[in-house]
Image (cartoon, rainbow, N blue to C red):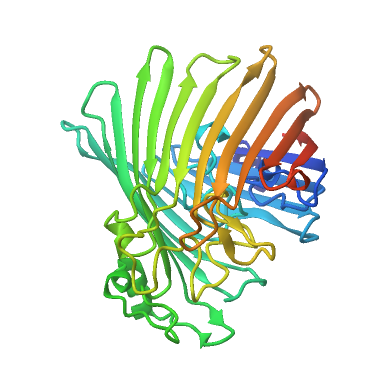
Amino acid sequence: MLLVISAAFSQEIEYSVSANAQGLVYSGEESPFWMHSNQRGRIDEATNYSSWITGTGIYDFWYGGKITAGMGVLYHDGYTNEAKLDEFYVGYEDDRIEVYAGSKQREEYFSGISATNENMLWSLNSRPVPGLSLKVKPLTLSERAGIRVKASWEEFFSDEHERYIQNIRIHHKSLHFIYSGLRNVELVAGVHHYVQWGGKSPEYGELPAGFEDYLRVITGGSIIGGDGLVGEQEVNGLGNHLGGYEVQLNTSLSHYDISLVYNTLFEDFSGIKLRNTPDGRYGIYIKDQQIEKWVQAFMYEFYFTRNQSKNYPTTDGKDNYFNNHLYRSGWTYENRIIGLPFMMLDEDRFRVAHNNIVAHHIGISGTAFYQYPYKFLASYRGNYGAKAGTSKPLERIISTYLDMNLWQEFINVNLQIGADLHSTSTESSNVGIGLRLEKSFF
């Protein structure tokens, strides 16, 4: 009887296992920008070899819900040489909610050709942080008016060892309204709020992490009141607050899907009031509904972070995106920027050295000769330093990247070519080539 039950249960489980191995060589001390950026934390700037194996399982219930579980192991050389968990999670999903516990790789948006994925604050640049996640899928508020709402609530717990404040927590919540009352138009508008809080400081010891402190963190009251002081290090609030407004207009024309994207970012009350305008992300995404086209998807994005509330500075001066006085490692995880990768760390990979930027980014994906899927990225950015920056760029950089699937039979073989061209010196320019092998077993 047990064998019969086990066999019947196993037939309901869908599972898959895939293994990847990737090698890179490059002319500089570090690989070209797009060869290590937005690579899900599997490759750092000095990596020459990376491999990971991932397994997932899905059990479907008769009413449409499903239990999901996944685990992956990662090893790469470079600045760290160690094996670690690429992801590990268990979750539940149906047509109303999605919940998981553990560390889960984030969903890819815009065909993987955006410079920052879903928004400016959390990209694919680092490994996923372990925690608990609850997402409410779009619920209808008014069917006649075409209004729906979706939301999320997440609590993450950093397991890093090499950061200034240990054992920090990250709170995240979001709320978005979706309007589809007009024919062929969908308007999505909402806000994200993130907070790094708690942890143990080498200077002040255990930081506030009680229930009352949590209430202050989730309500954002400490941002407005400005009374979250720890050793007189924080003047804007308890914890390191980040957030941003989002507006996305989706429509279609002929056989093309079109999205117009706008993101803001804020770290204090002046940003909440949009006093740092025009800082943010401006983009357009176009995808062909017909498959196997030479150009399947195209995206252009413009990033600007030079205002930094310069006309409305707080008591500690202008904005200093992704940096923080108390949480000195900033908006990072394992020495990787969590958000927009154009905001770069210093040479010690500790503080954000470039958060005052102007950047143009183009992404293209398609199928060359109707047989070879590819992704091409090209970006130009001017770095003006950090904390208000300079009047002239410290450097201008053009970064390009091509990832093409050359073979898809017994094993997938992808070739990558990347290059950086620096304005400061030809010695800083860099070119690299990589090869990735992928094999799916189930």
